[in-house]
Image (cartoon, rainbow, N blue to C red; front, top):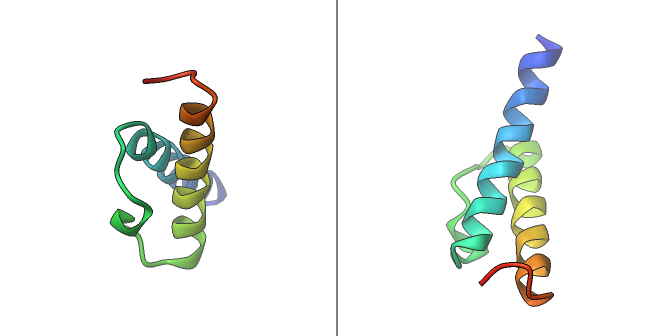
Length: 57
């Protein structure tokens, strides 16, 4: 059970990162659960930082 929960959060983080790279806004977060939403937003913020540093276009 614990591994499944971690995998779900990792997937949310990864999806948020991909959304950030593609230029979607943070309001497009598909999650309502607090934990998964915070992971998605963390990935989104990380992607925005990477884009601003010029790592991705």
